[in-house]
Length: 319
View 1: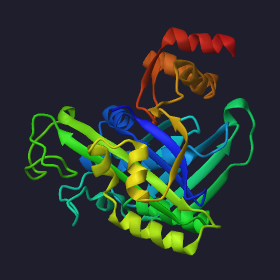
View 2: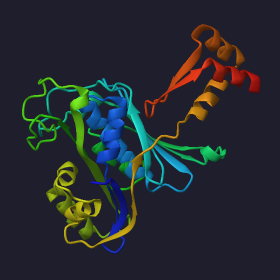
View 3: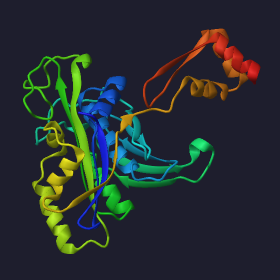
View 4: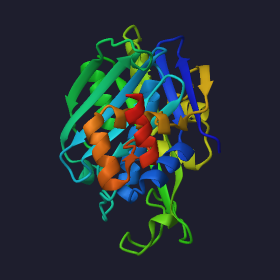
């Protein structure tokens, strides 16, 4: 299934909705960063949540979701723009909790722990508009990602939101048992990262507008409590609009916008050279003499740029 992101309203504009299927982009991120199963689930949830939040920012803006965790995973960061592009990484891609949680799902909370959640909006940085960014912060209250994003929206932006984010992992060559961990034997069974696959990923955010009717809010809450998990819906082949119809029940749904999201990083060889150039002549000369060049690895996408001594020498000539 192709990844898809939608914006919608419901109940005569009293409800705002965003939903996405992100299986391919989460799979690309996990492949690039070679994340272990629980780290994959955590990264996938943050990428999906960042994508949903970032889809509502203005042109030239970027939104960064940063989980600064005191658990073994360290930082989880996703950066998104309004065009459906998202990129991200975790500090420790090998963070993994062998045991499932009480619901039989990845114990993301065990690798996240506590800490703080930051959401930052930057405007116009790419074209030189150095506008002061907006940054909100709340404590990490659950470690389940979706609940923490909902808490941020309620406390920092005063918007009551239902947030559901999920990632289903499977292992090639191992029978799928239909649960989120995706294989029948306990997690102690040996497998290689090359066998690990993101089989389904996605989620939604549903928000009551401040002017929404109280009875409508109660109906929406009941509907959400009966809806399947986002992971189960994506796994079943639901599109984003079908996911929202499950969540909204009989409430009307109007899709306003549809995009094809992707994992996309703005790094390039040219940017790598600019970063090296900013280190100064002495540092560049030292790289040439001692290392015969330089290697720069992008945190966001794990792309490695090998810069030759000749390329670094050109920097010295230009500067």
